[in-house]
Structures are given as C-alpha cells and as structure tokens.
Image (cartoon, rainbow, N blue to C red; front, top):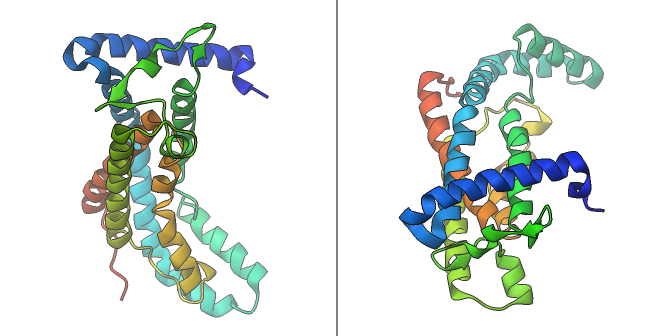
Length: 248
C-alpha cells in the first residue's frame, strides 16, 4: 500500500517537492548539479534551528535527572524487593520535578516525518504525476536518489556514490563516538538501565544513525549527517549552560 496515494499525504509530498525544487532552482546558479544537496543542508539547518527550544528543554531534563540520581539510588535501595512500589515511587519523583525518564525523545520524533519525506522525495521517479527533477541532482557526482545498499546490491557500481556515502557514514561514526564518550548516562545503583549489558546497548544506539544511512537515499543520509553534527555541537553548548554533576 502506498500511503502517499492518500490525498492529504500526496498534497504534502507535492508541496515539499515544490519547496525543495524551488530552493534548488535558486541555488542552481551557485552550485549547479549539487543545488539539491545544498538545499537539503539548508532545510536541515532550518529544522534544527526550529528545534532549539526543544533542545534546551532536553538539556534541562538531563540536568534534572542527574540531580535526581542520588534520590533514585535511595529509592532503589529502599524498594528493591518491591518492583511495583519502586516504579510508582520513581514516577512520582519524576512528576514532582516536572520531568520524565523519557524526556528528550521529542527531537528524534519530530524529525522522523522530515526524514520520511526526504526518503520518499528521492526515491520516486514521479511526484504527483510529474517527473521528479530532484533525481537529476547529485553531490560530487553521486546521485542523491541512490543508497549505498542499492548500488552495491543492484548496481550499477558508481565510485562517487561509494566515496560520498562512506564519507558521510564516517562523519556520523566519528560524531557518534564523540557523543558516546562525552555524554555518558548517569548510572543509578541497582537499576536495570545501569547494568553492563544495558549500558552496552545504549552505547551501540549512538551508531544506529550511521547504520540507517546505509539504506536510505544519499539525500536522506546528508540530512542525517548534518543533524548529528548539529546535535553534538548543540549538546556541548547547552551542557555548558546546564551542567550536570559528575557522579562520584
């Protein structure tokens, strides 16, 4: 089933196509065939700028959770034999501080529709019945509508696609590693989230974006690369503004 066949979503996709194609047309005299790639970068920067207030809320939530860590450890010690009571007390504690253990997920959820639209725009040969001219654009010779997996599996082999895709993935991996090292979660004694296995899983999640970029069109991979780089810089800046206590 094609969800973009439904009229509201079809209109949304066509509007997104018109906006991105229009921006690409304005940039074409400057960068030629890479105009759509630059347009994707600019759209990414606009989306991230609009989400700055959400990032500030996320930084505040991280600071609050870090300050709550000693009290959470006390709750773990007091109710470790009563999981239901422990969960209730933890939720009450978060509620009293106007935060949540899931605070900070909004930036990821808010960007999911943007990634989905970009994925679709650079996948379809036609948009609302007219040819998709965005597919004629590239980045350093790599077509924006080709994914690394599709090129390797179905061909034809294109060296620019391989090099550009690996370059973007390398950037994402470096950013993920820096993020993992700098922003380690505050451990809570006896918490399942602080177990060695769970901490390894949480560390591995930092690299999930790079894995995802292997399967999406290059345009979506470019969006993800700019996003993770922006996110790291923003978190470093906000961590200075909203510092968290270093666990003993």
